[in-house]
Length: 97
Image (cartoon, rainbow, N blue to C red; front, side):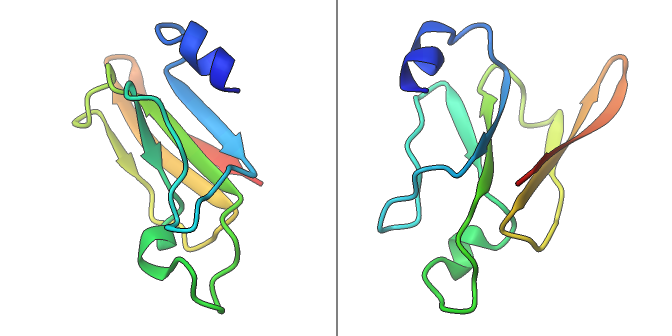
């Protein structure tokens, strides 16, 4: 995966990752040109016994303006979703484990 991200840094704009590596602090690894989007509540509730393990996340290229997308509030560790607005319309993108 790392080789793909590194070699295709200008071709992959939105990535849907399943079963991501999550370290002991609740974070994954990403290259500097990617923003990591965790499922709603992941950061706030990481490590609590009632919170299931995160199995979905998204990475968005920094060339996509943060003004053009928002994370959708879905209370599930297996789902990550964004709403992207472009000149051609509004799209909802889901990553469902």
